[in-house]
Length: 164
Image (tube, rainbow, N blue to C red; front, side, top):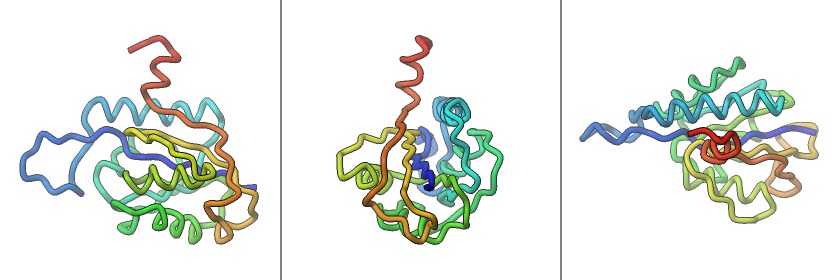
């Protein structure tokens, strides 16, 4: 059994006219959200051993703000990737029991839904889904057979805690 964490990057900053999309950073709300999602993963005791992260600045910064200690691989192929690009990355991931893939919409939202049996999943910024897959090796991963075991967004965590 393997655990796969799929996550969309946190809220980015659009305030710099002319800035290239790949170079956009997080805004303050995004930094707090990324930190919250890292805390949530610690709370549910689901910590990745390896993270595959899009090479875009906002995904790299999301990863840094999560304060998770494990190996991270920054991949150009995950920048604005489609669901199939994320699955391809999973299939070639280093051997580990728990893997995190951090990317972008719309591909991440589609991948989350396909992993959840084809249901539609809304993935706002920093949305995070945790799946179990009945496989022994990542190369055997597919969109079928995964079970969504947890899903959170920064907004739902704030609502649960009663704080703003």
